[in-house]
Image (cartoon, rainbow, N blue to C red; front, top):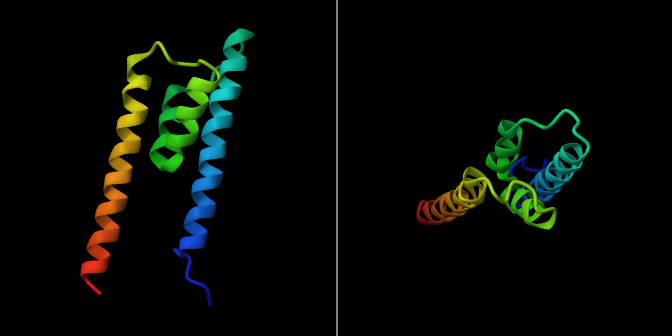
Length: 98
């Protein structure tokens, strides 16, 4: 039986969550242009916290959306950096325990 947290499954998850983050930025930008109901900022940050930092940041700059909001231009990259540092730490600590 395949392990749920295999490298393959983690990579698939990260690809999917980053596509979702990118699409959320696109959809929110289009809604903003048309004065429609918007995606809550909490949702955009949640997508980043769940591992979609590359996608949300790419969407932010591709669509020029939320680029004037300091909490996005600083917050999203800080979350991404912290997640990368945590992942490196966890990989390193797992190798030490083997």
